[in-house]
Amino acid sequence: MSVNRFSVIDADGHMMENDAELRRKLPPEARERRTLIPLDTWQRYLEGHPSEKRRADLQARLADMKSEGIDISVMYPTVGLNHIAIQEKSWAVEVARAYNDYLAEFCAQSGGVLAYVALLPIQDMPAAVEELNRACTKLNAAGAMLPCNGPPKDLSNEEFWPLYEEAERLGVGLGVHGNSFAATGIERFQSFIKVHTVAFPLDIMLALTGMVLGGIPEKFPNLKLAFLEAGVGWVPYWLERMDEEWERRRSEAPLVKRKPSEYCKEGNIFFSCEAEEEGLAYALDKLGEDIVIWASDYPHWDMTWPNMVHDITKRTDISDSAKRKIFDDNPRRFYRLNGS
Image 1: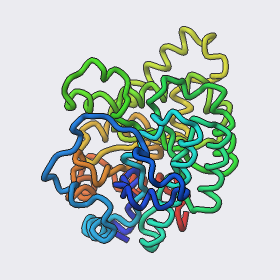
Image 2: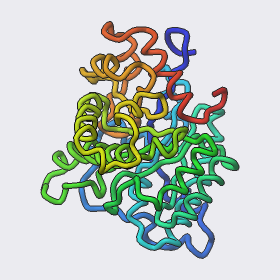
Image 3: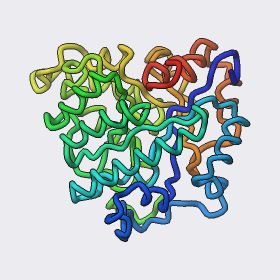
Image 4: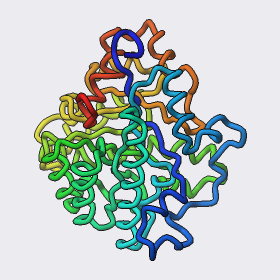
């Protein structure tokens, strides 16, 4: 146990993929393909930042986790966040399978300290459902990722329903994750500081709006969702806004039987927080303690490492019970982890 007699689970760390290792998991005839996942031309890294030295170094990562007091870290992709930009369905499937094989092998070397979420080829929904099942039943994935940007699709569209049905059946959480590669509205900017500022929260808000007002929590009442890397301070305001819209125009949301905020506070929809958020105590007061989880974003340059865990444990405006739930109880309910 790390602090205060409870475990600390990082609900959203990141894998810095090793291109050669990922290629090794592809079929031999596909390994020489020049580009695995298309990127963009932004200078999105900070030279000299500690994250630059912690790319895919397992031992460095484990040492940092130990010094922070983190018992388990659940990893999301980095370059793989832009997997949604792959236009060829068959290639999207190949890369997702290779990524999941790669991460399963990488995490197995950590002795249970590292876990991962599966990458899903939602370009081909039947294949995405199949890969969700394979990754979670055969490759020990802790959950799966659902991108909230890329092609402008409403995540409540019926094409996604088979995926939600399978995730619900398996008891697997879907982490809805932001991305600055193809985020909404960034085409108007010429500097990455502006892109990175708006990319994550705007697309997460859009995703939550679409899924809740589209009736996904009503149709799939046991489906577990998490909305990640946008902080939690905005959530009380946005739930209030969705409630007001629903009260006035509920005929346009025929699947929604109750206030949107009620679905979001029941315990199956989670929101990640960051250690330094001034609005965390306010959000906990408005949302309750049972739906907030902590995300480090390690090892990306915008993390607050070191002392990320301590930045929360030292706070006097948050109760000990809330700290335990944020760090331990809540992420265990969302993810499939050893001992959960």
